[in-house]
Amino acid sequence: MTSAPSIDDLVAATPQTRDRSVDFLRAFSIVIVVLWHWVFSVTHWNADAALTMPNPIGAVPFLWLVTWVLQIMPLFFFVGGFANLVGYRAASRRPHGDRAFLAQRLQRLLRPLAVLVAVWTVFEIGAYLVVPGYTGVLHWGWVVAVPLWFMGVYTAVTVLVPLTARLHARAPGTTLTGLGAIVVLVDFIRFAGGVEVVGYANLVFVFLFVHQIGYWFGDGTLTTSRRPAVLLALAGLGALIALTTFGPYAHSMVAVEGGEISNMMPPNACIAALGVFQAGLALLLRPYLNRRLANPATWKIVIAVNAIAMTVFAWHMTAYVMAVGAWRVLGHTLLADATEAWWLQRPVWLLLPGVFLAVLVQIFRRFENKLG
Image 1 (cartoon, rainbow, N blue to C red):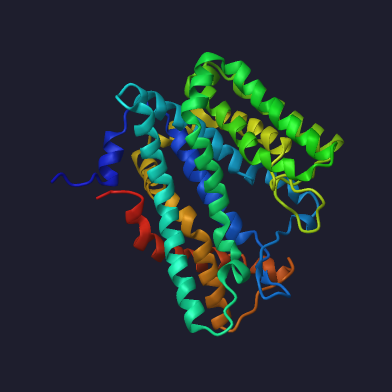
Image 2: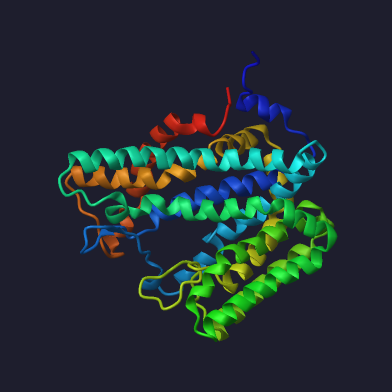
């Protein structure tokens, strides 16, 4: 039996033609999401004995500017579009290409999440049987389900790749423009028509739009010169400024406690514009990143992170909840406001959940990859 390749094997086998910046940005996106949830959340127990996770954006003037870079979900879909187009084109040259592509992609996405759901289901059944009056994790700790909504959307976008890739091949400009128009139309009906529920359609259309921009990256259209990157960055930034200044949109790209509008839930045109802006920045950084990633030691780190990325994403909030429990056992309380003491505790909320996540990844990584 042939042994599974090690990370060193994968480093040595990487072709010189590979665009390593895509792998870096994918790993970077996951790391930023994890750190944001751990370090930048004013997590505390509310009056209903449930964990709540507001952030300090509203308490610090102009801190919302940070979210224009660190609300990283659009970037993940952008590089996902690149990877999915390249993977789909390779698979389509083989028999049953669509089926093979989707099977490979969905297995990588869904296996870690299936294991997460299974483990929590067993835990919940045991807790209901043993703990009198147990209220259930979806009451006291719904935050462990945070990864599920995002991966649900990404799975839907991935399932549509055979369709969206064909549309891109036939009419790239029309397809991208059409998706952008749908995003704007949904927002118009939501805000001008007062039909709030229709906004949830943009859970798919906003991210389909950003994912479709990734196709233009994948087919080389956006890498012929620096000009497309500059235009994207300027267009995205200009749209963000206009929408948040003159439109009914919040300045922050994440939900703010007490805010009337959340740009992210459901996503709206601001998140689409943010995706354009971040795509431009990513393309501008691409030559620098590829030069740095040519270093085998640096590239090895990127491969190692990507090998466990879905496991990290699936379990990072479980690790966080375990850290909250450990904090309580140690006799500490959670701070409900972004005071000086809260800021001073930020290193704790990087290291403590990191310890638990390291253990969880060691246990569950086998469900994601077959590295030796």
